[in-house]
Image 1 (cartoon, rainbow, N blue to C red):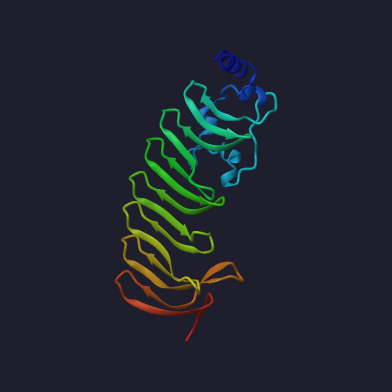
Image 2: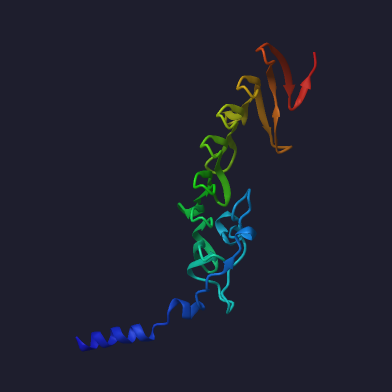
Length: 242
């Protein structure tokens, strides 16, 4: 029994800590809110440390070692700005905060291929939600401050093709919709709307791999604001005149 106790004590005393093996955990850096919080895009300074979404930088401590485990940064006021878990100097999971204490964004890994980012307005309401697949945005949705969807886009599970893309006015009325109708032939239907929500134009589109673009292809219906309709014929992005 004494031997077991002695072995345990020696293990605790002699085993180097994580910080000792890889350098000391860095002290919280202090930042001015005016310099790190963009009024449109929020706090993006940590994205370069996020390998999962294309970041290629490494965070080191004062001794030059890649930081490990949990790290916090703060505002000049002392309020928390960032809390993230680092592995070999790169972020694996993290949250950023506005100086008022509300969360600015939250990132987490879902599985080997997928990860999720949520971005918020300063008042705490959801601004954007993004699901990444192998570093590319597979599903992206932006919201107005009133909670209405402003823009949403979805790609196939393996990022092979676009599934849909839609935009809306702040009152929820559609502005533009683009949805796949034939996966094999990569055919789509597009609809455009007036500000009052009435349809303005609709018709088929097709993906042209040679131009890496979506082109009008087929008969389009064009509506005036009274609802009267006229027809246009398109072939590979070129309008055919009668």
